[in-house]
Length: 120
Image (tube, rainbow, N blue to C red):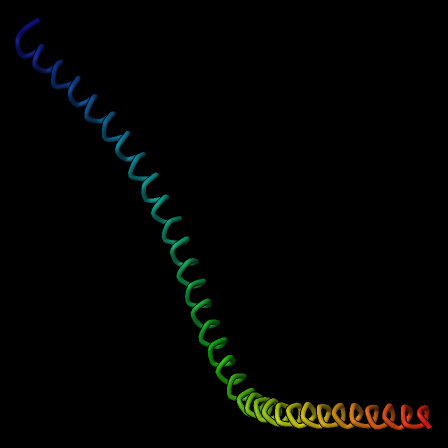
């Protein structure tokens, strides 16, 4: 073989190797593009889900604020009732203590009279 034939053979081998590597790169790029497309679809789905979640959170916040405003008068009324019941309870305790003292006095008077009758 001549020098030209050897160089041609080397060039043919290099071209075959380059072609094989190009085929391999093409397959890898195709797989990468397919993966990119599925990743974009997943990101789009995630984006939509996050937007819906954000919208739902905003609606829930507005509903919570509305409910809070609706409950404010009820809470104020409840606080007023607690204060009123506290006064009533205090008055009831005072009346009960006076009744207890009165009962003790009546018992003492009854015992004195009973002793006086026993002595006579």
